Image (cartoon, rainbow over all chains, first blue to last red; front, side):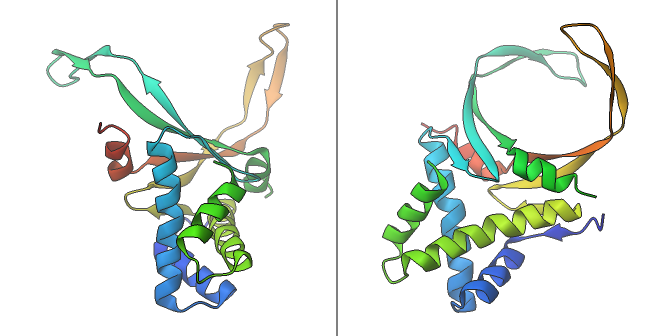
Length: 97
Length: 93
């Protein structure tokens, strides 16, 4: 485990190396990929990427929470949350030594 | 939306690119993320979210149906935390 962090810049660089678009265009395309996924999720769609995993939007109902510092009860409003489920392919890959 | 639909939508948005190129772009993005996680790296995509790997120690589990004890090996599991901006976008309107 190296513990370093991969960012957009690394993804753009990989697209640049792999596809042969300009650096600028490569980074725009990485952004487009993330944006298309976001748009679909905001529209309530599930996004399934085979051999990687799926992103789904889940509706949460209102519940009573508590401010841990003051102990005061506060309502947690109903909201939509995103859940990611890794595919078996990805899970297995992460566990191969 | 599936991966092929994602490719389709991106191709429509980028008519100057071949379908093959768009396919390679999408595959490269997910391949890089998967490879990073396999190395134990974190992937941080501001505004979208962050992928990381959490380590789980070996433990003695129990088959909930039979009550039988089973040894669960140590493993690493991927998880995703939604970025602030996307979380907010999911909750407007």
